[in-house]
Length: 537
Ligand SMILES: NC(=O)N[C@H]1NC(=O)NC1=O
Ligand SMILES: [Zn+2]
Ligand SMILES: [Zn+2]
Image 1 (cartoon, rainbow, N blue to C red):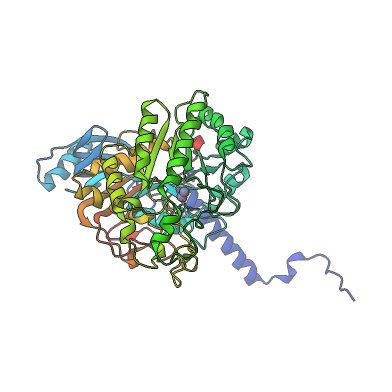
Image 2 (image 1 turned 30 degrees about the vertical axis):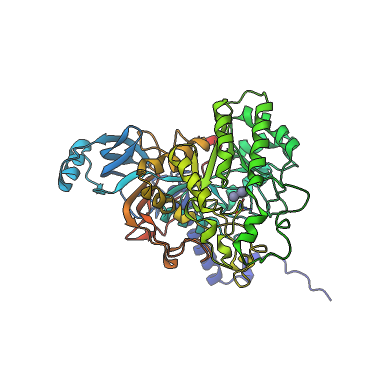
């Protein structure tokens, strides 16, 4: 027999204690939501709402202060200067007397601005925060691989003030406006640094310009495609025809096209061409399965398609070659640039830090695609970086759980392809620069100036100048980065940078004026990052 539901008195089943408990939970929840709104700058919570902390989010509370040092990197050069920060923006950057002693530098800043909160970083470099345009945060859907919270904490500790998230390996992948919205929702309350999103172009949407436009309207900063299987089933690679269909849209919309440029050489799938007998615990086996020609052929095809498409390109469009490993493709890219084609190229920290020869047997945490190549190739990449022939550097941070890295078997052919190194972009790049006589300004050019332009945020981010977001990194070119696992913020303790001796020590990271990381106090407990959507720029 069924029992009739009791009529009337709907609250009779709850005790007074339960009701009070729910009320308290709701108030705490509401406060949490309002505090996040206040911190992220989305909404100014009215002054009459109680219990909301209206000081700066993060480790330093004043809303107006000065950051000063003898080495402030500005668009007009590097000199002793004071950066005036107010409510998340840079009000002004002014030169102060560099020959002065430390107390005089503080004093000079105080006199110049008449502000009492001064953070004097003496001889440390004060530079625009780094922008990592190539990060796989894997959320929603694969938070077990990484996650927005852990990834953006790693970014904060690494001096990175903005990350741009790839449209894969989250599940589902970001290929419609609804899925862009899903990404944005997933980021709520998770971001320690500012975050933008790339959308995905796959065969299904490449020719549907309305879909692509709706994704831009939802906030993506540009698009990403693979020319070879991505390892993620719902993110299939595009072919020549798909690229042809997408290019006119991308050019007219004035947004970048980020391409994983490797092309399969024949009908066999990647990984099968090295022969079954080859030892899968050797990196050489993986390397042999992804020869440099795969990159060369893909880039050659991209340049041809770019040349053939006659749609005029709006400012902001560039065909951006992701993670170049093969230095021999650079002359071709240079020739295309000379011809006036809108093409740019990035390499990654790991190609500049590690070479194929240095990968130990079974060390699958060094596996990435394209693979780490020979030392001689790395030297050429460095020459190109030094000569300004590589536009930018990014991490291509692409972690996964340790079991997928085949840590036990050491099988390179089965392991997930992707290196986790978001936290080490600054030291990984600077260490090699320092050896080669390059300057901190070169790091800023590659990691901030170019990156901001690529993502279309050059009017908001990427430079220390009046009116810009106060995204600042303070770092020591002669200090060693902490590469211990204890200091690692990403989800899993798997990275080839572990315990590596690398110069480039991050002292402090400010995101829109919020001190989100300091060497002394580590990453802030409060969540201060916000989304950077196309419509905000
Ligand atoms: N799906 C994915 O993250 N792939 C990345 N990993 C890697 O090593 N190269 C890539 O393109
Ligand atoms: Zn890629
Ligand atoms: Zn990638």
